[in-house]
Image (cartoon, rainbow over all chains, first blue to last red):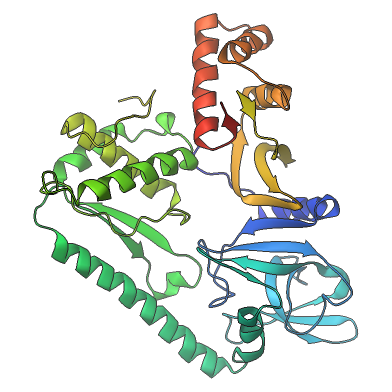
Length: 284
Length: 89
């Protein structure tokens, strides 16, 4: 399995059915229209059914727009029958729908290491203080993006500075130009070993694919052990720390697959042991 | 082995998937897509202990495949489910 792609329409209709039986449903986030409060890929949101106060200015809701598109945006204006919505990351774009096309409310945002619940200080800060002016939004979002790029740049520089040899070097970079970043963030795995690329090209066959979760599970174990070995005086000449691979971040199938196979390459081709246990049934 | 109590099989469109719930919250952020045979084995095993042998026998009975093939398939599925935290020993 590479990845499961379910059309938005089918997915959200299913989620609405679930909300009839469950108090809340947690779903992943795609798209960057709610930046900076909700970040795509890394954040997750909790949807709950509506109550009497849900359709109120400032709340974030799941709605179907007049163009028949499901969105999760903040309510900007409530009129008699028409609700105006706007994503925090959208400069001027607004959507409209009627009340009956608002189905659920976002009551929590799950970040990597913390949860922001509706009503908390951080939640209210984003709700009350986020700029309405398109110009101020543009300036803030530009700064936010620049800071993020600077952060990743510094990680790469720090990593390269720490490296002493061409082998055992793995780098995970965020990819994407300005236009692409509006909708998605992708990661790229760079391995500084030309032998690996040739070997990997021979192994990379869709018929042998396993799930992304499978590769993530093994990669977390491998990265943890690898980074430990990088600190050991007798072995660190080969192992350079892998910076950037964090549990809970969705790096996508391709990166996880390639990283997993890099570890197999090190263990089976270069014959440098990493883990004491090994994945079984992986075909080479 | 046993399937964790908080796991459910759901149908979205034509897809069968595994999701977990934590109290009143259903989690769709980590889902596992199932093929027909995996769905069959898992749905038959909720709430009861099972072994690799049990699953291999069920596969042989339902699909008429060889014992060796059934054992290999059952083992591969169990490995994936343990890795994903769906099954515990």
